[in-house]
Image (cartoon, rainbow, N blue to C red):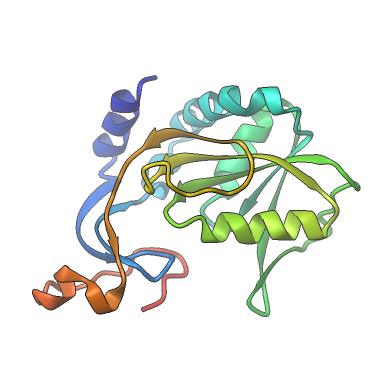
Amino acid sequence: MTENEILDIFRKHSALLEGHFVLTSGLHSDRYIQCALVLQHPATAEALCAQLASKLGNLGATVVAAPALGGVIVSYEVARALGVRSLFTERQDGVMTLRRGFTIAPGEPTLVVEDVVTTGGSTRETITAVEQAGGNVVGVGSLIDRSGGKVDLGVPRSALVTLDVKSYNPADCPLCKSGTPVVKPGSRSKR
């Protein structure tokens, strides 16, 4: 699938939203990508994640990790396409960590995947959790990269779609200044 075909899938499922949004990072934006509306369809999730897996498969990962909640389905489907394990990190006392008995062998080659990357914050936290568990992060992937490819995570990175979507610090947000009501659609957004 091309980037335009993938974006058409997101449009078909009303997953590309326009307005005034608080992102997971706390930044504000006039566009929001709600991957859950796409990933709720198993055949679509499988197809998108298989394409992402094909971009990352040469890195030799034996496990795929993602931050909960948005990355769980992506991790599972990418891992399934690669024939490897899938696990996820979650916050415990505000720190991203492996829980639920998940383990990573010392030096185990690990991919970190995500639904959407804006600043790379959740991905960085997951990389840290994987490394603290002994894993070796060999690459990062996402369905959507909102940063225009600007986020550097220190390892090879791939996305199905790269967009350059403006994000604003709340103090400098032109949408706030114009009085446009703000919506907080993410799973852990902060104002």
